Image (spheres, rainbow, N blue to C red):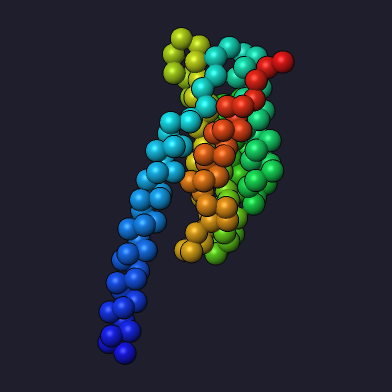
Length: 131
């Protein structure tokens, strides 16, 4: 039994290192791809794309919605479904960053992975452009 626990601890530690490296890579990519907009038209289109992404990908409905912030209801206990907070932050000179925080309430992780989903959110919002 003791050998089994030592083996389990070793596997857990090694898995944690891999997961930590993977999380660091996704976190870095999320920071690098944070959507930025300038001007009313571009910001309105990207803000709409952010809302649409959350509606299509979060596991809970939007609870609060405003001109520069919206969020969903919190996830149910043990749920792997994503919840979201999205804000539009002034950077100066008429530029804004649209940032999101995604999470779930499951000790085994979110479905989809919250960091991968954040990168997808960023890429989707960045791809939106005024016509």
